[in-house]
Image (cartoon, rainbow, N blue to C red; front, side, top):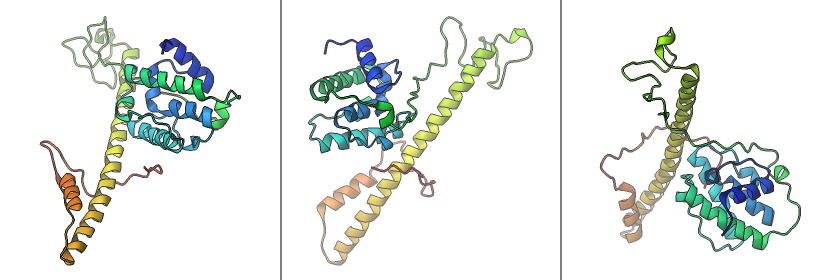
Length: 249
């Protein structure tokens, strides 16, 4: 409990042969999975995405972690909904627990972290910097107030007041945001497809019971949940492109 963030990161980087610089990076879930693997040696590391960049990939890692906890009867809830947000405090608390668990259970033998993940990439994305930059009085577009400069590049001439570095930085952020949007759309469609499968199964069972003159309260309640909506909610189109992800829960 008394270990600082620096000490915890030092231990984590040495154990797993990675180069994390912030506790928040643990929110992807990959490091937690491999720490547990260093104890038991049976985590399916081929399914762990150490370089996960999107929340739906983080969820795959946490599903692996929860399955391992269950198989080894580890009575510790994993607050997935908090950890995936990559907030420092939530991940610091869980990393502290992981370190204590490792101290109590590690077998004391050499652990080849790189071999266990088969040399897979451990690059972990940093949090996206805010568009506004301090000290420059720049608008989100990178230009001085009162001027409008397209993201594609600055105006010709030095009067534009936008350095190539700022333009390149904003373009990189835009690409990252586009990638995150694509990931969120895939995640949405992934879960919508699962709910649609459940809906079909429930409806089929209800119709079967109705034909036999029977009913099932639980199935009716499930239907109510499936069909309930909130103001501003839009159902994804039925012909949305299905996911080609091979990972499933």
